[in-house]
Image 1 (cartoon, one colour):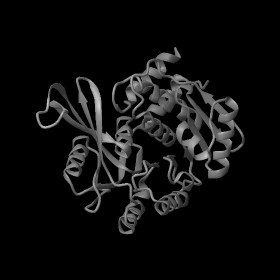
Image 2: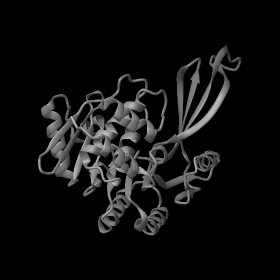
Image 3: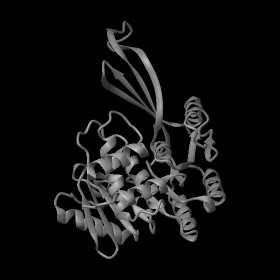
Length: 331
């Protein structure tokens, strides 16, 4: 178990403030139609949802950017949206949250990635996805690199947030990591199944259990399996650290010298695990940027995930709540 003194917590909390973190990846929008079903359609044997509420929230890399903001940092989202109604809603949300969208490019050849959930009588009945999984064009990729070159000297960290929606191409990944290495900038990765082994030479690589099992072709059940998986990832990716999230088993942190530390899950009750991965990578990165070592940062990230898992829906972690909870539990 990691222990952090009150003075150290205060120091890190202050260090979060104003940290400039670029979040590069798949910007997404989550839509919700909420209402009741009281009749069947005369047109077909299907229920009719009488919509009582319609709202939109950030998803994907945009939710990571929002988490950086609620943790006291300054997020700089870098990605792509479409020239469509959902893109207009996305831009409006950015303005509402006072998040800079100058580096979110509009591509009229692809849609804004949007996942719309229909909730009837408090039951999630269907999800409608509008997206393109094809890679962004070379032209868009080159624009992102130019943007990053303009940003890089004023960054405290970079998050590569991949949902396999086409923004993080192997070529773009390689170029971003190359720039970050040249400038000695902290770089963390939240991968998905594709491109998994393209994220070489980063500061922290943070996969989850399902992704790791699929990519390594193994079931991870025992403590020995966890250790073996972590060692294989370190070797294959040449990352400084690997943080493997294990669901209800917490997290495992690995470093090149063979050191491995486990941290049990902090969640007291699990209402919804949606967005927990976004919370982990956001908290981990801003903590490292604030001067935390990898174990302090992982400890805080694990705590943050435990807090948001107790909430219903995708809820960003608040800096005040995070540090108050950690301090309260340490007494």
